[in-house]
Amino acid sequence: MRTLVIENVHVAPVAGPEIPRGYLRLDGDTITAVGPMAAAPPPPPGAERIDASGCLATPGLVNTHHHLYQWATQGLAQEATLFEWLVALYPVWAAMDAEVVGGAAGAALGWLALSGCTTTSDHHYVFPQGRGDLLAATIEAARRVGLRFHPARGSMDRGRSRGGLPPDAVVEDLDEILTATAAAVDEHHDPSPSSRLRVAVAPCSPFSASAELMTEAAALARDKGVRLHTHLAETLDEDEHCVARFGLRPVDYLDKLGWLGPDVWLAHAVHLTDADIGRLAATGTGSAHCPSSNGRLGAGIARVSELLRRGANVGLGVDGSASSELTPLAGEMRQALLLQRARYGPRALTARQALELATLGGARNLGRAAELGTLEPGKLADVALWRVDGPFAAAVADPVCALVLGPQPPLARLLVGGETVVEDGELRTAAQDDLGRAGAAAHRRLMRLARSHLP
Ligand SMILES: [Zn+2]
Image (cartoon, rainbow, N blue to C red; front, side, top):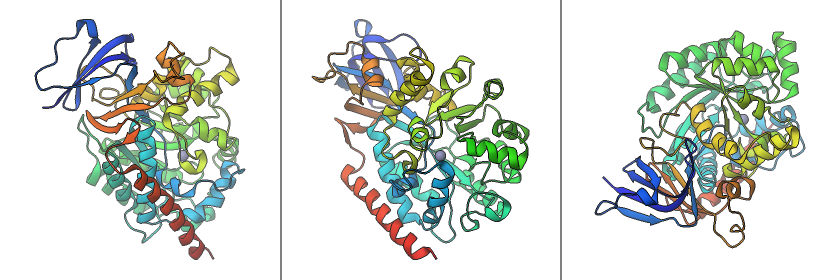
């Protein structure tokens, strides 16, 4: 088994006190020791050693909301509200195929890795007929880039003719959805502790999924022992839609459908009342805060500090690139902190709380707090080494402050299960520029397909 010892590093383990000059020992895919250099035993013969002087070690960042395919539709509907943006983009997405999704996902995952992400979820909810295996295309891309992957098999069955927002052409039939979702879990889900691939069940939103789909999806997920994910309370338009159609606000509606619980995490959760926050905390329901996307669409500012104060779990998400553009996950720590403070004052969120959102908060959302999200013996060896001694960064004595409050520092190393994914700011698992070019080609292909697809 390969042993890797990272030495002379400032360790921010997220759980427990920081170690200003510490070491980490990784055996195979697991962290086996963390401590101060002064107490480090000599490395075993044959161990690989990394001198990480000038670096900060954090747990690999965990991204808990994304739509990888949206890499191919950046820059569109730039001044739209969420509903206007969706109505503009649904017909374009209807034209995507497995080649578009593979190219978009590769670029999006490479970009995530370069911002310190070691585990990401993906919420894919548009499955046009006869366009290839789109879910498999994302899984293949994640394998190539080398990230831990939690694809959420999304779905929509409530088209315009049933009072939903999407055109009927992009929704699926309920039975088809349930069959395909069960098959995705059976074929791909790996429940083992060191898993690199876990599948979740994820009807898209209250305005695009029927109550029947929500209920059946929850039953399916609980039967198979996998997690549940959906969008909720993103905008005031959604609030109005839920009150008008269901006579309930979004959190009450989900509660009525049996959709709150420790196996559920919700994207956005922006518009919450005090009572909503209480329900999320009491039921152990997590949320994925996506500050850049919420800002881009003018959706509002989530009540993150209040959620945390009342004991509800919050992780971070970059959200799809069509609503957040080129958003690096590390940068979302800063965005989250700045938005909370702009709204609620300078003590609303600390740099260390922001780091916890991006790591342990994310791991909890994905049901993996036992394996991911902190640097502790027994956890998986997913580690980010940030170079915080560059000439312009060196004026900050606090490395966690440099990481969260400043622009993203260079990524000296990113390890997933002890294996190098990024080194000296370059992707090592795949040709970085090729991934980027394939993402741009996916955009051009989708625009071409959409033009020929549209009436
Ligand atoms: Zn989303």
